[in-house]
Image 1 (cartoon, rainbow over the protein chains, first blue to last red):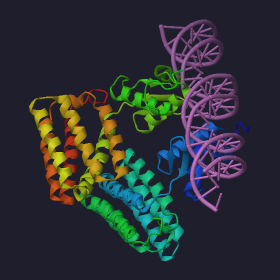
Image 2 (image 1 turned 180 degrees about the horizontal axis):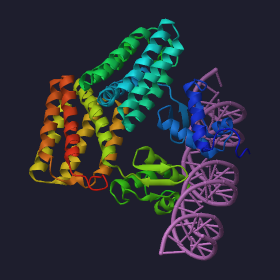
Image 3 (image 1 turned 135 degrees about the vertical axis):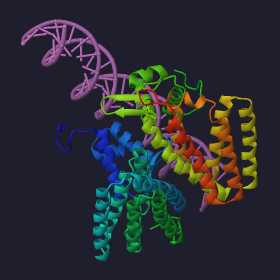
Image 4 (image 1 turned 120 degrees about the horizontal axis):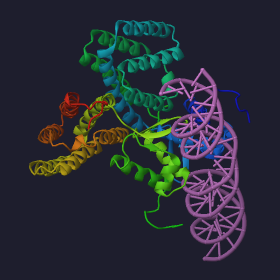
Length: 225
Length: 225
DNA sequence: CCGCTCGACGTTGCATGTAATCTAGCGCGC
DNA sequence: GCGCGCTAGATTACATGCAACGTCGAGCGG
């Protein structure tokens, strides 16, 4: 139809993937929802080919599960899966901090401190949404500093899965001040340039989140809400 | 054509993926080779749909690179990529050992020691191929013991990439005895049940491989041969 | 009333048609 | 001789046709 309308020239499959991902991460498509190719195709206004490709990519990133000959459903991660995810994330986030400590320049540290200041302000204001956003940006910046593209990609995948699984939990203001404190310790470690210290700071941050998770109440189905 | 001939009932795309992967890992399709959909389709005797899907999966696992509107080529990993891969692997293999140390039972340890004994025999016999196989099986067993499916999947992807990048290097008998020694230290650590010790043993094993890599000669194009 | 079979529907997986895009090779002008 | 545009072929990305399969519910038999 529209040959050059809407979004900048990029593949239909790519755009379908992005749209689908946003819908899933925003719980517009709740976990457990079936993703049938014709449905998704019609919903996104594309043909079945790009829809199928988009679903495959979503599944590959762990946001949906596919059973051969049966189709895909939006991933509904239980507590055990989240533990797995956090275990891997702890190791990788530690690595990110270690590498970042060896590569960060003064300007990078300053940028992180700036982010941190904004974060403090958000927490003091009790702005949960902004806290969440700044938390994401902090970690994104650190893994960018690490300069390892595979590490970055993997951490982003894990982040997405967590975002999907803890859609509501994330918004609870519980650990906001603690997160800021731990982020500050990470920045301090990065500034010191000590890779061992940096790794420890990064790991303990994630390890604490994992412990909080284990301590938290689960609903009867083994999921966090 | 053949409705039930050959391979056990499984999707064409799946079989195409497996065949393509084997061809790539065995350097039947050398790094840099173009993977055009019609070519692969004809070569594997399937239509373009499953061929396209197989190539996409191969690319997703890092065994090929795709440039939009230009097609895919078998990945030709340079030294920097290998460093990235080993950095991530170090962190994940450490995690695998840590988790395994908490979950391994006596029987598991015994099985590892059995593998180790076979490995020793292979090394003493100078059987490089068998050394390589047993090395792979050792690591596969450890990550299986870790009981974290995401960790396992990620380590397998990394292993494949390494196998592709160091097709020839792997066959050099250089570090065979060292590998066995380090594997024994890993088993000892697993048996001790000390997660910190186990993680350190796993990490240092991979870290040593990374150091060897950095010390090795590179060819003029930045690749290891 | 309950279980079972059968059939209609929807979906997946594969095959194939087609427009837009990219690449390579050739010839032309400078 | 050298660089440049242009055309021809190949290739990607998307659209769509179609058979096999799985699911679910209605109707039948016990």
